Each structure stands twice: as structure tokens, then as C-alpha cells.
Image 1 (cartoon, rainbow, N blue to C red):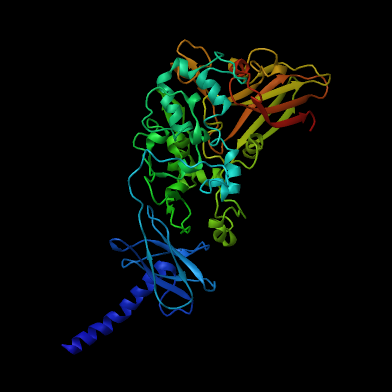
Image 2: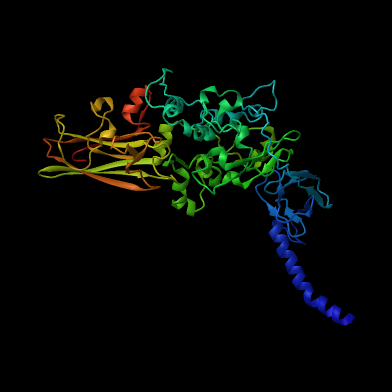
Length: 522
């Protein structure tokens, strides 16, 4: 009997050793017997060992995973003791323990915040204020400065939005132009669910956002974003903003903040991989409003090559910033992993951002009876339609051709800009009828009136927006020039239709993004 057991042990010994090596490699590439300095231990919670927890040294990008017994073995990668070892699991508070170079196994205990969401929670303001040390900007100064320049920070007070919402103009004059609150008050709840998401959840009737005050006036603010425990996409586009999210606000006691960082072990932070997934953005960036597909950034991304490649919204819009040293809590991370902290707002103005994603070129040839041009517009590194967001945002490609003495050449063949581009003097931005192409999703009323807001009965008049990373070549044929012709091609980004912008008194409605000239003979 003993000889049989010994034979079995001799047979299984190498297999068990190989299994241990493989388990060690999976947990952190630190197999038993390795010369590499390893930190060993286990991760537990109230139910016992935790399998699949992420474990690593704080400030290092390397992570191991616990095995079925909750055990881990992670290499130090040359770092010297003392080190802080952290463990995380989605939904759990990040745990940490000090490793001082000894061989005693560490024990890291994960705890879970209470699942109860308190509607009586008092939101934390974002701005730095020494009198209120809990406010976000006190420690996260650079992140706060970036966020404060973003559309999220202005979502409740953005004058374009407010003017459309309540019928005012840029200067605060009332009863001027479109007003959602007057025409479709039943849609006001959709507005606040994304623009003012920290209003009380029982506000489901007609909401007058002009009365918004306190932290809610900060719009999509720090504390709200980091209280999102889960998003629900079962009714994508029909459940808007906060109605498609599950928040977790503590009733009392220990605070909780969700986020993508997995080694902030102060006790308040909960690791959530959701924060680096496009699904997190979907509740506010996909919307059917009164039957109109008003916002479609998320579904556009889903249909793009970027989604198939696993490139998320955050990879572009919240790319991690090199060298960001923002707060004491993240200092250790930033010193060793300089791309640890995500950008929280624009680092360039809108025109600069658009220029970096749009390219324009023109080629031409003179014939005996005409001037032929090919204009190419290229969109690059964009994971959604261009332009996207609010309907009626437009890119206007405007082509002007003259002969040697400045006489405008007649367009013989090629597209012209539609009436919605503005009727009147082209020098004042009214480009209807001019040679060119309009890239937009334009809505018209059921009687053909164009444009109309998405809250009125409508249909799509045309949708010519560019697909992700698409190139569009547009050909024009002008009458024969006298002498050397001159061609000017402009690409203009227009926030809102010309007539609407004039009625509301909106400044900077047109932004020139690219300008390309061509001379005959070049």
C-alpha cells in the first residue's frame, strides 16, 4: 500500500509542480523557486478566499490575479521594500497592506460598501474651498481645472442649451425663438436627466431648470460621476441619463467613490472597470426624444471599426495624461506610471480639436472649356459620425473659383449648398446656393419646413455626415477661366442653423476649420 502511494506521489509530483508553476505565473509571473523577489499572500473577504482579485504594488502598472484559494505571488520588478501592496475587485473597496521585505505572507481583506442608495445624500461640491476639505478641487486641483472648462461642468448653465430650453436669447431676453419648455414641457425630464443629473430622483414631472441651485448647478460634476455603480442599457436611448444609472450614495458613515484606478487604498475608493468602457457614456450620449433619434454617439461608435478594435470612448475623450501629478492620493501612481490619470476636460479649444481630425486638399486641371476640381475631405481618428451630437450641427465645404481678374466662375457641374445653409449674402455667412457640400443631419417638419427642432414632429431631410475615418471626394466643374484661375476652399463648422443662431444672438456660431487655396498651373 505504501509502495503504491509512493509511486503515485512520484507520478503526480512533476504534474503538481507544473500546476503550481502555472498557477504562480497566472497570479503574477512569480513561480515558486524563482530568483525574482516575490511578495506572497492572499486576499479574503467576509466569505473567505477571493478568487480573481487583482493584486499589485501601488504605483506599478503590473498586476497579478489571485487563484482559487485567494493566494497570490507577485514580483517586485526590482522595487525595494517598503512597498504598498494593493488588492481590488469590481465593487469592493480597494485594500492595501505594507510589505517590508520579509517572507511573511500578507493578508488583504476586501470590504464592500452598503448597496443602499440614499436619496437624502448631500452632494459634494467640486470647487476647491479650504473651509470644506472634502470638496474635490482641494486635492484634485488640475483635474478640477480641466473639468471646469468642459461641457460637463457647463451642462446646467450652457447658454446655448438654456436658450433653447427656456426661449431666451444670448442676452437673457425672453420669448425669442425656440423654447422646449413652452412647446414640449413633457420632455423637460429628459433634459435634466443628463444636464442636471443630481436633481432629486423624485423630480419626474415638468422641471424648470432655471430654478436649479447648489451643487446641482455644477451639472455633470465630480461627485455625481464617481457615484455611478452601474449603467443599464436594456432600453438604450429610451432611459436617459440618470434614469439609466444605478447610483450608490452612502446614507452616513464611510464615503464611497467609484473609478478606474485600482490602487487608491485610502478606504473610500471602489475599483470599477466600467469607467473605462463606452457603456459608461451611453446613458447621456444616446437618446430618443419624443420619437426622434436626437443623439446617437454611442450607437455610432458601436457600428464603427473602433468598437470592433476595442477602442473605447475614454481612450480618445479621456486619454491618460502624461506626467499628471494631481493629488496626494495619486502621487505614488503618477511617479511611476505617468499615464495613470485621465484627462477630465479639453486641452485645446474646439477649432483646434476639429482641425486635428479633419484634413482638406484640392486638385485641379484646366481644359479648353472648363476648370475641373476635386476636393477631398478626410476625417481621421474619430470613432463616431462627423459631426455628431445635437442634430443640425454641420460641416460646410464652400468652394469659390474666380478667373485672373476676380470674376466668379459659373458652376457647370457639382453640388451646391442647400437652403438650410442660409439665404442671403455669402459675405455674411449665408451660403445657400454656393458651390459646396454640407455634412449634417438635418431635420425638417412634416410640411417640409427646414430646419425644425427635434421635439417637434419631424423627419430626416438628409443625413450626409461622414463615417468614422471616411474620405469624401467632391468634384466640381466650373466655366473656362480667363487667365490663371484662383480657387479658395473653406471648411466651416457651424454649431446651429444660421437663422436660429441669428434669432438667438449666438456669437461664434461659425468656426473656420480648414482653408485651402489652389492656383491654376500649380
